[in-house]
View 1: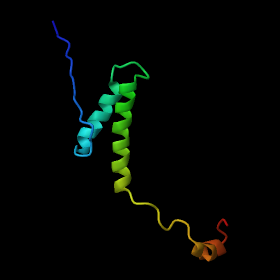
View 2: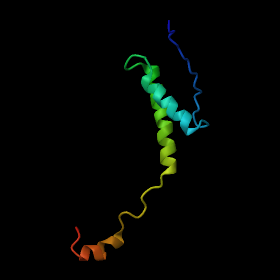
View 3: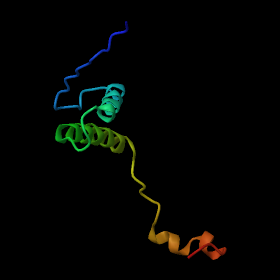
View 4: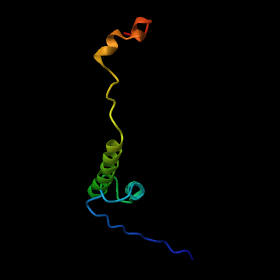
Length: 84
């Protein structure tokens, strides 16, 4: 007979030292958590992991700095019939 398995994972409060791969594994774990919908601990865990993923993503992605500028008001694209 095949035996069922149970796995317990202890996750420290500070997730900043973990690799991206481990963090993604924690995200998947937070989503398959068998806790009932709305369970406070499950919700807080998923939010904590999600916020760390977002923090890392935003830290690596530069902002759009020059997408809209005053100099574009008189650009040749506008003069050639582009939208105002």
